[in-house]
Image (tube, rainbow, N blue to C red; front, side, top):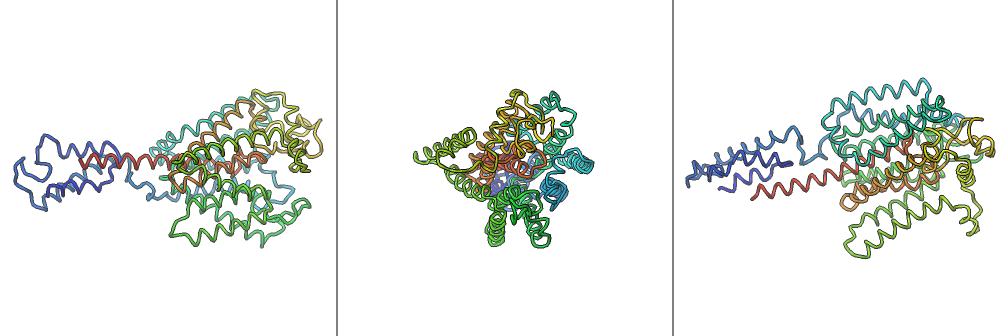
Length: 500
């Protein structure tokens, strides 16, 4: 009968040392056998009702002590996220994904994003900033705890904000760039303030997944109902689906990330629905004619499975190391020597003008330390360093078509190091949890996808780019998964201490 009182405590959600201390305070050692089902230390046993009452008292003591800090900490994944922060997340995804111009005309595809300081943009983002601040204040304890947990991976983003502020202030075109930098700063602050209020990684991933599915279905409806606005009409991309967005490659990347979020949310209860949505997403990617997104999706799924293997055998450990080394070296060599490599292989391609653009940008770059300011250098008309030396296409390029080169141009070597630090830390965090969590494995795949995509497109350290925002969300979710798994291990150790 004495074990009954202990058994009543063993099933409790003991999450912290406070719970164990509360248990010991309820049944102090000096009380002899009085706290374990005996009266006054005697050998006289209590009745089953007394034992049940004592177990209930212990349960109340432990639950009361841990209620402020854990709020049911043993099962964080079962806690729901309230409607207000989820509505903010959905609003942000649609604002950034459409650039406040859903189904844009092709000649206006980048107008809102490049303007950066339009009245509509300022009003919408300032409104979201106020609402995100209110939401952060309403959940200040949880939000601050989650932010501190994610601080190591957030530091490169915060550092880039400082670097970009310095480079923009010292830029020869500072007056033109200040509103663009303000949009970068505000948009990233808003998004981080929203996602840190999520009660668990599962709630964050599921909410983002549902929003992305709605985004995909609206885009799909637009293809059939508004083909002149949702399908490219220009000669170069004629017939390619672009949905709500401005370009087929951007839509393809969003759909690839949507597929990864769907895979992360896959469970037995939703298996038929999720598999059907994945089929729709894959068909949509194919119709965007974005070969990079489709190939990248399958590549990162394979890489995440290989790198996420627990590697108990030496063969797997060696394979993981070889894959990582090949991955890094290939990206570096491709960026620096893609054209000679293509010539050697007899491939007649300049990646739609990207290779000459990269060479041209590197040749006229004269501010390697601090760069030209956020969104400087490009698309400045006659003030652009490319204007006098570039051809018809590169002269008016909006960006470098390479995320790493873009950060180097905007913020110099310091911004480039921030970019590399973010992706390295993100990959390390994702790779760690990929070994023990299926959802974590696909958050790791999101990071790998963006590492590859930034070779030919621009997402890294950006504003009003949904692909960048989803990368940040995936990294923060990976950090949360890692923390939740660590908390579960601590609970198991504490439960064993209680059993003793």
